[in-house]
Length: 256
Ligand code: ADP
Ligand code: MG
Image (cartoon, rainbow, N blue to C red; front, side, top):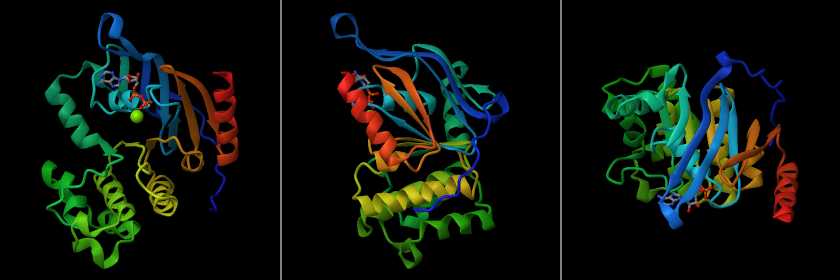
């Protein structure tokens, strides 16, 4: 994979799309209580692909779900742009999710009765918005499905389905896209095609994307990797390579 080296943008408030401060979340009570997020501070920079890594159970999905307003936090603040989502009621949150957030799930979550094209336009249809014609064409072209756009998900490969799901997340031009293990169900070739599409979203559409992964190769597509352990961000890596990430994972494994 060839990729232009870009200078890392400086972190200043205007450059941050999503921010969490002192984010706490636990599940269960008493003996069964599990602290999933333990005062997490994170800032997601605009126009970057940020990867979140960490052992199973370290809080990756919980962090994503809280940042995306799909799950509520117990304490701390979350901001998407200049909106504090931890202060919104359910109706406002639903609206913010619809208008400003895209989500890509490990299991694709396409609507089986709709064609690929209908799946891509679904969020716009629900919001009563028309696709911007030039933009829509670019996103659909980037998916690279050609004449299979009229097919239903069951007639597409896993990689094709996930590319449709990425396009569905990108087409509404959300402030931020969250992807939880988007390549987790794919072989390496199909995974690479999905990662290329996300990279294109960032590099040519200026999209901001946060992706959870446990795969060092997937993480190498990111501009920055945040490592979680036991509900905390323990390390940050700029300009990751698969080798550097693998080495870091081995070190963390050895320290356990
Ligand atoms: P990861 O995505 O890194 O594997 P999660 O965010 O899913 O981690 O989970 C973090 C911790 O919270 C784990 O110990 C997990 O068992 C626990 N947890 C997550 N979701 C729930 C839930 N709905 N009920 C109870 N415990 C949960
Ligand atoms: Mg998870």
